[in-house]
Image (tube, rainbow, N blue to C red; front, top):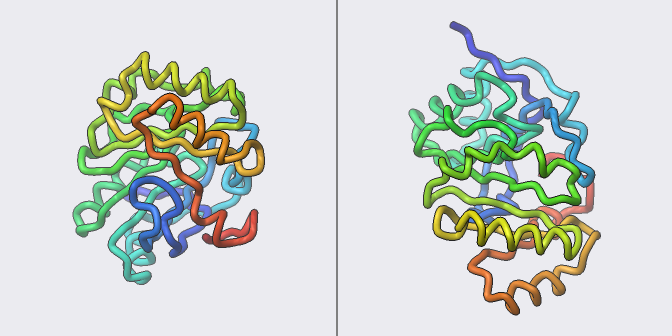
Length: 215
C-alpha cells in the first residue's frame, strides 16, 4: 500500500518549545485540523498543502541533515498515515517528536515517539475537545503543554495538573499566548504555587518576527 500524507511545509529550524528547545530540528507540518483554537498561529496549515508519499518525505527530511524531526500541524493525528510516517522515521534512526492537540487518540503512536500534547485551556475555545483517555497513555518521556491567555487558564491548568497527577505521568510545560498575558506574571504564579512544571517562552517567536513562516 502506498501511504500518503498531506503536507503543508517541511523546513529546518531550531526547536522552539519542549525539553528539546534550542536544538536544530526538521519540522514536517501536516495539513488540516478540525479544531478552531482562538489563538491558533498556523491557520494557513488548515488548508494549504499537497499530498506526498512517505518515502518522498523521508528523502526531503534526510536531505536537511538533522536527526531530530517533529511532526506538527495542523493536527498530524487527523491523518491515518501519520503513525506509519513516525515508524519510518524511527526505523531510520531519527529522534521523533509529535506535537498534537490532544483531541485525537494516542493509541497508534509508536512507544519511542516523544509526544508533546496540548491540554487545551478555556481561552482556546476547544478545551471540551480533549480526548481524555490520552492521559492514561502518557509516558515519562511525553510532555503535556498548557498555553495560557489569562488567570482563568492558569487556574484550569492548576486543577488539571493536580486532579490528574500530570507531573507524575509526564513532563508538564506552561507557556503564554503571544501578546495576551505578561510572561513575568505567569512566572510569578508558578513560583507562588511551587508548580513542578517547565515554564517556556517559545524561542522561535523571540528570534524571528511574528507570523514568519518556515521557522
